[in-house]
Length: 388
Image (cartoon, rainbow, N blue to C red; front, side, top):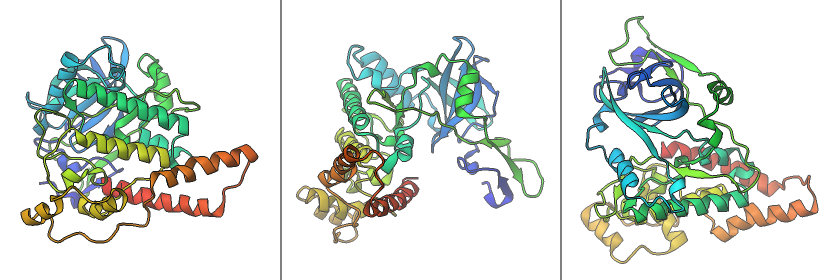
């Protein structure tokens, strides 16, 4: 077991202790995979079960994304790989939602010091919708863009359902904007957009050698830029690590706590309805710049919030949860004061704002909106921390 106190880490990244047998594969810039075909160029992200990298495909002369899965999730029965393959086999290529689902280009296994790792080669996409949201005024997408993204996500989910598959983990961080020229662009231009890799060296405080299977350094994830000036932005839904066949729903899925639907909170049987709940949550967030519900410590905090906005839970759900021990006591209270009905948020975010634009292009922001924006910053920071 790695003692983190013994190490100095140059920048925030995935958990260093997970670079151990069964965990992450240590990857360095310019490493090659799959017999030299793919060369690691930059880091795009990481999660609990994988690191994600920009790579150059020297065989097809294009830029791709490679997701390197932890060893203990990389066996031949990998659900994510099974789902991606099933989409290729079952999916209707003429369905309008197909282009809004990330497609598997290639897959292979790579042997390393921590085990055998599944590597998924996917198309190279642009920034996350959540990142774009955070950069926009009032932390929300433009109305036309938000409507377009919502429509594309509905088409994507309809395509999945037509193939008998539920995504299971829809949120703004798994919605990426498409930048078609990225795949074929010269690598120099791609890196100019991303910026040079930022590296944080990993060192033992006593000057000793690193544990076997650890990388020499971490690479800070980078994200592409995007200019959204109209409703033309195309998106794709990514990350099928929590996906499942609708006919074979799992007992549990791992998603950000704030997005947990009632059946997951109260441990009722899951179904494809979890996608509908998360679509609603994500659309609300993109449109208004706020999360409809927030879980600070655990998902049971959502119960009074959901009840305030949507009314009572289905008959028997709360008593059943109390009887089974899922709930220790009956929930009470009406949740936080940050909750607003969608109509009110739309008025605040769009209607009042657009009316002001018509009267004066350089209108100053009213004090009450400044206060709301400040509260939004606080809510967003707390929400992101809780979702981690």
